[in-house]
Length: 86
Image (cartoon, rainbow, N blue to C red):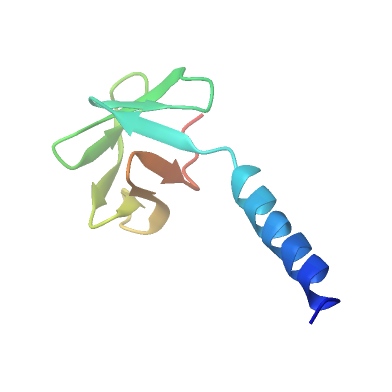
């Protein structure tokens, strides 16, 4: 058991580091921002818009869809993962 403790600690640190290494976009008050809080898009009434306010997709039920209704990202608790707006 004494030998397993350092390995379990390393595993936990590795998992936490891998989660923190993912740069997440955020959404708040109708704006979609990158990790540096620069606005990269907008969201409103179920639509996702680019900087020129063109509709590039939709959001619902924790997922972001493109105009062909294919999943291109997901959102939860103010964070967006896997969305490419730039």
